[in-house]
Structure formats: structure tokens, C-alpha cells
Length: 605
Image 1 (cartoon, rainbow, N blue to C red):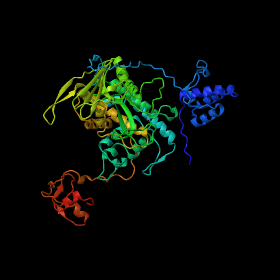
Image 2: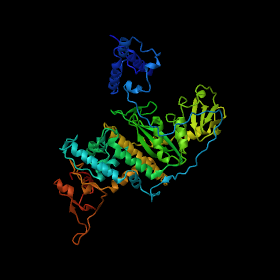
Image 3: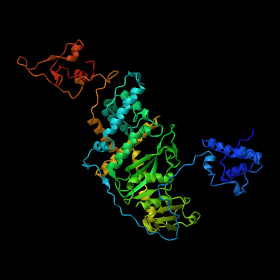
């Protein structure tokens, strides 16, 4: 079978040759340019030229070789004919309007960097009035997930249920139940039960309502019926499908994402040290923006960029996040995608003297130069093959403990040899080496660059946030990606609530905070009366079989000093027996042995 031709884009010289040879042809010279113009118009819609076909046709007409670059200048009039190489190759030329100043060509010098750090002028801390250490978990959580968001979920869930299920549905249990509009209270309790499922882990949802003594959890069945919970879960929705314009990939969750980003930023302002990193929510379903990252434990999932506080007791607080949905479609900004993420997340904090810590996927001299122009300090690991990086450091060989430094345009580039080469870029550090206070196996002091120590301390915000969120996480397996992502965002809101409570003086753990939140939601939220189904859990227990019962003498009367009565148990058996004793609570006359014991232990008595 003949090998298929490989298509490639034409080079500028090849296109110039085409115009030159067409202009030199004898009989078709007037029409050749027009023919090529037609081909250019056709190809501008998305097709590509095949190199072999064009080469054959051109050689037939003019006898020239398309790869010949020695073309006379008089055959081409550059003033009258403007070549658009992208248009000829079938790709429309993007109109880029740079809205930022690219970093100048950095002249790196072999000397230390003298930083000019911008003083911090932010106002960090809790921004919600009247919040203190005695504020309840429910009040703090409600400031992050406000009633307006709950109302939006209620409206969209009811709308979706009415549109998709106009007739009663046959539940898994076999019950044919019509849809009843969900209320705000039910959504709150639904979320509380979902969070509790992250603490009390069971393989299947139905097991939380099981009556098996091995699996029984009465709290769930006493709070909400299983069918009602499954009904809400099935119809849970956050935005109206008919308003989807097929542009925003996060349309189904857009109200939740926008509201959480708003409350995260309004309730708390981070301290000076912040970090930007990505998190990966595990998801193996079908979705257009699923990512693969072998360095993450989940490996496959939805990537979320997060800006977190790095130090103080609120370390891990997510101040802003952005869900990655694929290649950036903004053609007006030719920054690298990694730089756009940093500038977008930190946009409202620029100019206040913040210290941003990032890893080597984001770091570049251009980004550091731009952040420095915005009075923002930045430090991070870097890849030496980035543009404008010092070329002489790429192949440098160092012994363990040695450093190599370069500086320029207010940026320090440092390579320190540990077990491997550690590459650091910083606008706020010198090449100072400090004693860590630890000893190696030979009892020698361990010395590291100050920028490396600060980076290790300042880069843990996002990892700590993920660690706290995975402690009894609410996320469960779902076919619908937006439901699983919603639970991920719900955990993020709970962790922010916990960290805000911690800054106010709270002393409980994450699990204790979640338990307190669940109790407060369930206790403060009245629910409708649900109709009971099926057989009762058990028959009512008679009063004679509850509590403590003791025999006592039948009290004397005017006629008898030592009265007797017929035994209640013996009378049922048809035996006539008199007893001087009775039960102090039941009031029935009983033989002390064995009738008294049988009467209080056996149902048939």
C-alpha cells in the first residue's frame, strides 16, 4: 500500500517562488495570480495545500523548481502584493494587541542581587463584622455559602425536576413518588447529610438508611427519608440549561463559582505571604477539560488553580480559585498561559507589597519583571530553559553545597547544588547562606540559601488546603462532573470557614468543626412532615418491660391486715393462686417467683 503524503505548511520562500514563477509564465501570466488568489481564499477557510501537488503544477507551467530560492526581485512587487503567510497556509492571522510591557533583554551579571522590597501595605484579617471566637460554625459557614446561593440552588433544582420529570418517577425502592418542590431548609439538611457521609464512610448511599444492625445509622433515617435524599441528589442543579450559550464550559456551575469567589475574597484578606499552585480533583469520566498530571496522586481529573495564604494560623485559606477548562481563547493577550494564571489570581492584590511564591511551571523572567513593576515581590523555582534565563547556567557543574548566582533587572537567579540542582528565581532575596540549625550525619552544620528556606515555608498553602479538604471529604463518585465539582467546592468553603474560625480563636479540629456545623444545621432547620412508608421499625415496647420494677407488699385495708390478691400471671394460665406481693409500678399482684420475672420479661404475659 502506497504511503500517504504528509502535509506541511509552506514556507515564505516557497510562496514567493510560486508568485514569481506564475508571473514569468507566457500564456497564463494574467490568470495565474488570480487563480492563486482563489486558492488562498479557499484555504483560508481551514484547508491546507499539499506540497507535492503544488510542486507538480508549478513545474508544469513554468518549468521552475519550487525549492529554488534564487528568485529575481523584479518578479515580486512587495508594495503592491502583501503576502499573508498564515492565510496561504490555511490559518487566519490572529490580531494580537499586547497590553503589557514585555521585559527587556536581561543582561545577567555574575554578582549578588540587592533587593528593593516593597513594604507591605495590605490590611489582612477577618472582614466580617461582629465575628469573634464565640461565633457559631453555622454563622461562619453561612457567610461563605449565603442564603442567596441556597435560594438559587432551590430554584434551579425545582425547575430542572419539573422539566425533566413531568410524571411520577419509579424509585429504586419501587415507590412511585411524584416530585415535591424542594425548600431551602431541605437543601441545607441535604448538604449537612452529605458532609456527614464524608465522616461516616460507607460503600453505598443506601447503606446509610439500612436497618441492618451492622450498618445502621439512625441519624440519617430520623432526619430525612432515603427516597427524598435520592430525589434531591438526582435533580440537584445550579443553572438553567436553556441559558447555556455553549461558550462557557463551566456554565452549569457558574453561579456557584462566582458566588464562592466573591465571598472568599470579601470575608478575609490574606497576610503578606501567599502561594499560587494547582490542585487536581480526581475525575475519570468524560469531560473535555480533563487533565493528566503524573505528579499528582489523582493523576486524572479537573485542575483548579488556587491562591492560598502560606503562613499564620490561616495557612491554607483559599482566597481565589480558577477552574481550568482548556486552552485559553483570549488572542488579544500574548502572555504565556502560566503568567496569565498568576496575574489573574493576584490581580486585586498587586501593588500592596505581597510576597508571592510559585513553582517552576509559572516562573519566568518576564513574569517576575512585570510583578516587580506592580510593586509585588515574588520567589519561585524556575526552569533554566525559559526565555531570557542566563544561558551559561544551563550546563553548569557544581559540587554539593556550592551556588552560582546571576542578577539583572532586579531579579536574582540562583542555582544551589543539594542532592540535585535547585534553581531559584527571586526579586526579594540575596544569595545569603544561613545555618538551618540541623546537623548532617557527619555532625556538620547544614547550610542553605535563605531564598530556599523561605520558598519551602511559603509554598505549602495549597497543599495544606488540599490536605484539610481530604480529611473526611464530602466528594463521592458521580457520573455528572458538575455535581462532583460542587462537592469539591463545598469542602473548600467548609475549610475556609474552619480556618476563619481558627483565626478568631477557635480551638477545634476540622472533624469537630464539621460535626458542630452538622448539628447546628439539623437542629436549627425545621423540615416538613415526611410520610412514613413500610412496616414500623418495631412494635411499641410495653411499659412493664421498661425501667426498674420492684415487688412490694400489698397495703393493708380496714378489713384485712395481711391482704392477698390473685396472681396476674397464674390467672392467665387458669391457675388460682393468691399472692401478698405486687409490682410497685404496674400495680399487678404477682407471685414473687417465678411470675414477677416472667411478667416483666416476656411479651406473652
